[in-house]
Length: 186
Image 1 (cartoon, rainbow, N blue to C red):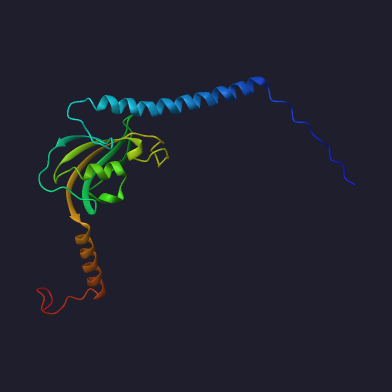
Image 2: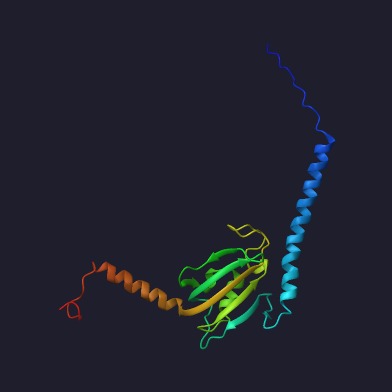
């Protein structure tokens, strides 16, 4: 027969419990303050000169107007961009013109792209519900309002992109040989 020796757990000091509750309350208050900071910023920003607010709540300002057509939801755009948090921290920046499918990005960015004519530069302020919402995404905290500076260089319909990809695949399937009768083949 084995004997189990019970080791009593010492009681937790009241001061530790008090500090635990103070910490929990501080965390809740801090989270609420961060959420309100984004809302307060967007309310003030909406009154700034040149800022337009869409029905969804996306805010934008035209930095440089472009001309011509605007991309649709199924197009693939070529953009330069920089994404920042409200505190000025850059969380993403293109190093070169970057292809982006209009429907393949967060809702606020997609909505903004569809407003831009070729050659334009816009600044978007994207509220959390049009961005990443309440989830942490890499360096972006939950509930973040995002700021993007975007230059729309060009865009192509998705069908054209697919056709170009098929032509590349067919060219690669021919073993890289140049067909006879072509200017380079003889």
